[in-house]
Amino acid sequence: MRKGQRWLGGVLGGLVLLGSLVGCTPTAQATHATRPTSATSTKSPSQNPQPKQAAAATAKSQRKLRRLIQRDLQGVGGRWSVRVTRNGAQPVQITTGNHPVRRQRAASTIKLYIMLTIFQRAQRHQLRLTSATHDQLRRMIGNSDNEAANQLIATAGGLKAVNRVIRQHGFTQTTLGRHLMDVRALKNGHDNWTSVRDLTRFLTLLAQHRLLGGSADRQMLTLMRHCRNHSKLPLLVKNVTVYNKTGEYPDLGVQNDAALFRTATGRWLTVVVLSQGGRSQRQYPAMNRLGRDVVQTLH
Image (cartoon, rainbow, N blue to C red; front, side, top):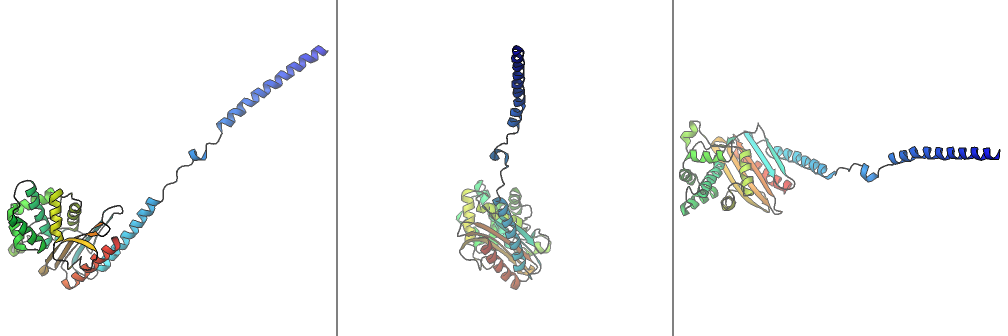
């Protein structure tokens, strides 16, 4: 009897031990399988709100600036278009007008492309920049001298040569269609054309020394810095360096200005306005306000 009890007790003890082993194994596996991963590894990184906030602020600033442009040019009449840009960490680019923006009469802003042609041909050793050529460039850009411009067109190789350079640089809305002061050609439907887009791109590349590069771009900027006509966009602007070229043909109501402003903080701003079919007594004050307000807003 005692022997049988000992045998039965041994069997029961073995079953208990086996049961505990069998029972523990899946529990341990379950615990291992469901062990929570640390918060660091499962939590998706939160997105930095700063880029979104900066983009929203830029969009708001551009809407404000667009309204400001419309306000400054209200009542000018005719057809006008404006393009404003700021390069750098917080870029701005606005194009607007009172009609669909397209090419317009260039007047003397076409002289920028004549200047480009002269320097490109000199850079390629296709002509030599003599003292006479330098003098003509200074008169054409600084004083907007039409005779000097026509002499430089001839030096460059004629209208076709200038238009070839214009096309090479991708200024698709710009054409030199006649010599300066050629009224007969104008009456026959030939004129000089450009756009706020082409002029802005010209100025931007020039400021970045990426138009022709190096010495040529520096010389062109120097010529523009000595433009004597600051009666439009730059008139009310303070504490900036101005590089600009105006254009006017009062008989057709044309008043244009293409300006680069370098602010005291080193920012480059471009403001280009083309206005035709308007009245100068309204165009000039509107451009004065526009230059002042854009620089104050974007400096």
